[in-house]
Length: 172
Image 1 (cartoon, rainbow, N blue to C red):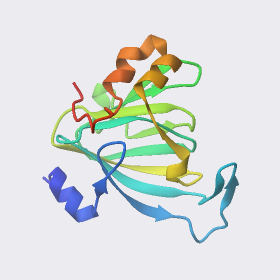
Image 2 (cartoon, rainbow, N blue to C red):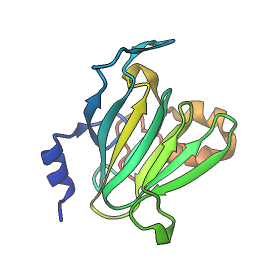
Image 3 (cartoon, rainbow, N blue to C red):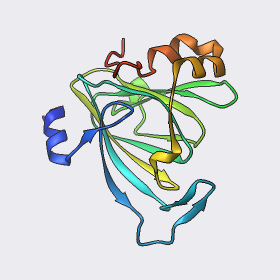
């Protein structure tokens, strides 16, 4: 069974600013770009994304593009979603439908999300982003700002925000 470190090496993954590891696997540079209010974007990009026992949290962030998440290997990953209207939703990406786990999760642009590895050494997913991902289109969550936006979910917000002095590697 491949370990987290096997996947990091095999896929050439690097640390991600939101937590975990990633590598871009595709960008649709063979098609005309899509104009957005923040500049031209690829029609589609994709990445591999890995959470590990040592880096189990994808901290709160907001993407402007729609994202499809696909579970590939390892333990389940819980996603926490805060919608602009204040609604909270959760989903677990994984391989066990008997436990309510799903293989695919769609997250519309404009929804805040955080994730954490539920169990095991790692959880490997891929993401397809349209219009294509650009770091200029991602906002990292700040505890005070998100708590003001979502006062009913302050404990959850603070649990999965990156600490100012460095990464919070605790999902607990």
